Image (cartoon, rainbow, N blue to C red; front, side, top):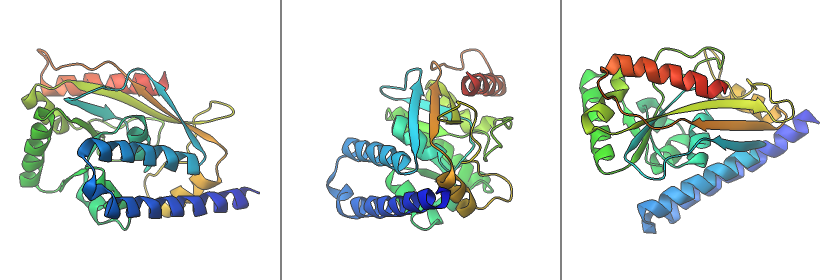
Length: 245
């Protein structure tokens, strides 16, 4: 029964991805940015439903920008989960842009790409993020830089907050968690760490019993008199509390 359920979910998932690619190719050129954002949010909500995942939002998502969302990172599902809760532009490693199918969808959703090994590109990205915030956009970053195991959070990279500091924009901490729908216990089915393959993580998620994705928004805050590193550590601790609340 588990394999049958997973196979059915997989068929729905593939069909939904194909639908998304068609929308991007045929509908997006005629839509305004706000209409595109609304489409991305609806598509993400439907994606979760096809995977057997429900969404629970705690706290208040940002109504408008400028604001930078900072969240813990545990799965390939984190981006569609956050899009389903509130559309935002993600900052992601440049590798994602070249991923088959996923890269096309990520680009259509407004993702900003950064080449992490290049200092020059990092400076360019800070400038692009600053300009996006100054335009009143909602950005999202995963300051851990990679996915964790869902048990302990990795340290945050302070440089990802530089754009918010320069643009004098607020930062809103966000805690992410996946839970077994029936028991409320943390679900590690969607995890994607270490030597795990993306395909293996997707299949494990498809095989899992119903999952609830919890997105917990804390109140937005500004750096104030804190230096960037002190503020980064405070945000790390806040996100850690939110994901466990």
